[in-house]
Amino acid sequence: MGRVVTVGSLNVDHVTRVERHPGPGETILGESGGRLAGGKGANQAMAARAAGAEVTMLGCVGEDEDGRAHLERLTAAGVDVSHVRRSATAPTGRAVITVDAAGENTIIVVPGANAELAAEDLAPVDALGGGDVVLLQLEVPLDVVERAIGRAGRAGATVLVNVSPWAALAPEAVAAVDVAVVNEHEALLLADSDLVPRSVLVTFGAAGAAWDGTPADGVPVPEGEVVDTTGAGDAFCGALAAALAAGVERTEALQRALAAGADAVRHAGAQPDGEL
Ligand code: RIB
Image (tube, rainbow, N blue to C red; front, side):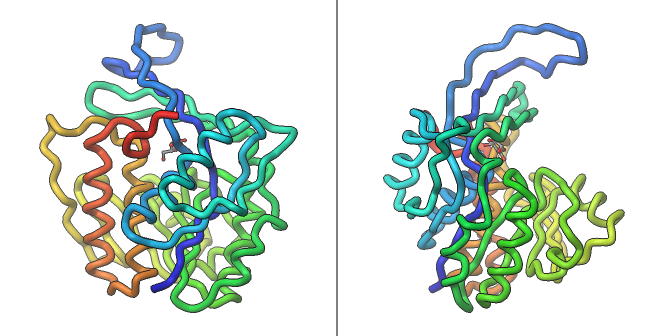
């Protein structure tokens, strides 16, 4: 059974529930949905851990209460955060999120300390080997992501990149990505780029996914049970990484990921019981 190392962001999600999202220039009323644990990196680390993997998180938070609470929460869940750096100069990252009555969200990320993650923070990646999985997203500096891809590949680990939020990584880095996970929108941008990962997994929300063109149905969730879609993609990626690290074959790994994504829309926030 391999390890999962997640390299990525840790945010505090400031959530507002709204009946519908406002248009440009419009003011509407909403109600507080709380201050919740978030950040694609942390969400994916928690999801991989919930799926049974041994997980190490690499990232950067501020020397503030938000950073402390985040690390405590991850530690309580069994995620190794001993290599997460505390920045003395930047606050913990935050995300401003609105969620409408249908559970659909808008997200604005203010990176804060996530932007201070550096190549020096990647040392645990070099100690990995075959069977281990490195899971990345793009809310930390792109050059660090590119370095992590190269170092993980040289160590013999499987490299999974959730190309979200979309950004064009260096072509030579993308060529070393074992699996790029993208949603429909990101898939179009990837297709329009000159970037060629070894394998592409496209997610279609509730409709399922396609891995290198082979489709798989989603796990249906009745409309009335969809509370919040925030973090569903992260739950998918975390569960997928955990399955691949456990040596599960591709079709079954995808099924587990789809099931985790479906489960994630049934609770408020990006992580289950995510209050900070
Ligand atoms: O994918 C959802 C996540 O995106 C949120 O938790 C938010 O923090 C942003 O990183």
